[in-house]
Length: 249
Length: 249
DNA sequence: AATATTTTTTGATAAATATCAATAAATAAG
DNA sequence: CTTATTTATTGATATTTATCAAAAAATATT
Image (cartoon, rainbow over all chains, first blue to last red; front, side, top):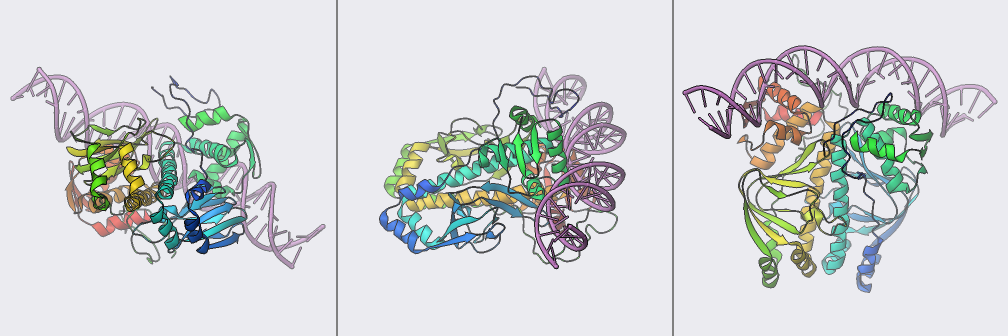
């Protein structure tokens, strides 16, 4: 159980450590979809939602949720990838990238602060449904199975943030970048080759680093044949090494 | 709205910035107590909990919840302060300090991963009640008002972590230490003079810094008459300056 | 296609923070 | 009360990371 902290060192091996007793666990746990929640609703409850629903299409770059505005809606993203981020006074940090069939805004349910805690923008064309929060809460009050399913989604989200917080405090910059690449691969795209809808600046905001540093590490990974880069297209060539860098870096 | 980032500079003023349009918002939002939830329960529901309850006393330093173990209980802390932290492979990070009348383990409800995500240890003598998770879930299923109140607690917690994540990524070390002091003052002790039940190492884990760096900054704050230190006893002497350091640092 | 604009990349440098080592202070143990 | 042990502090140094500036590449505009 003793790990001697190392530094990623091109000349020798990547790592020097004594034991490897733990299996690798990605910090980016698999996301879950939220569509099953609707199956728990009765006809009349579905009708309440239907009567208080607006369907909207967003183009790439458009804002679905703006941090600080009143949270009047619960959003269900039917189609499209979006990024959730917090805007600080000087920096932005991308909390997560969300795929289809996910709720947005659940974390503003029942809070004293009636505003959204984060901003969400579309990374590609998105089809969403806006549910009036009052109506949504009415359904929550009526249907306890639905309510508990929502708890499940919220807690799943929380788990991810615990991991993220640990990642950000504990890992060095290479570990953060490796973790991000694995997260994109495992969680968002589900394959080893993908094209990201993010700029280098956004990648940096996702990793929690400066843009220059992020780029430099990506290039370093490329030079060491861990990944192949071409603009926004990524190819993972040595996943297990990335995992080790993510874990020990 | 333009802030010229500064560095805390003893010789001149602490900060150089052009405008101050935003009001200070602590990153450590006031914690809420969880005891009102019980008032939402019927006699029979209270009985279910009562029949599946164990009352335990913990001494200082004892582990209430251990990260990675099966989450079989929902804990209600009746009395005493505890620390919640995540154990990484090389570092620990204290998520928060919890006071009386708070649930622990709510974030493990309905998650696929059946284990606790964090460790909780008593910082002083604690009186807690362990509720069997099955029984707790049964009550959740029966009582939607209770269930929604639990959502409220979970989301309140989430809000705090968003702020914490931002704090950790955005602030420099002085900002982090200032924020921590304000958090202890506002949130945990509710006054300007208090004695912390934490070692310097634990303070560092709370701030997300090395111990040496944390100590140095504390001494710096003391030299600049922002705080008065004596071992574990703290006295805040210039709160507004700490707030500015927390906000701009 | 030529030009302007933005994004990405590289290099040099400065700043921030962690680490290591040594000492001092506080607490515990005998 | 003295000694041992842990915790806190200080100083020196190395490492990490951000920042600034400039160049290259990619994209958008005319």
